[in-house]
Length: 189
Image (cartoon, rainbow, N blue to C red; front, side):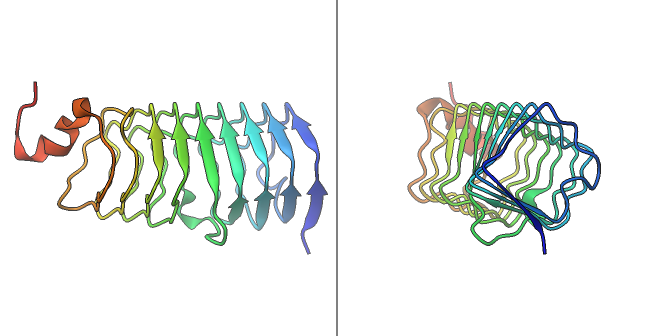
């Protein structure tokens, strides 16, 4: 039976490898905490907020994120694809998610606002209605993804092949068309 924590504020904590294992956090706020050394096992976050936290390199294979918000967090090289898929709801604002993986996840309606998403793996991910607001998507991979109704209008540096990614009713800015046409060697000026 996991330990249960409700409505607690955690500040300036550097967590050890197994410190959060077998715990459930609900309506908790984590500020300036470091989870980089963690190898998560049976951890649940429900209606939690992470502010200015570091997850870079953390192993989050057995984590449930249920309505979780990340603000100004560094989450480099983190594999979300093995997280608990039941009610997987997350939102990111002003975060660095470079080299992270969302492979095969269903993240419908997720918002990424002012995020660095360099070389992120979105392969085979359901990105339906996802908002990419002012995000750097340089070298991110979208092969076999479903990005119907996704909004890329204010984002940049993406390269998406419309032949391998479903983009029905997805929104792009005129300046971003070169990211859809790169494979065809068409020059847009």
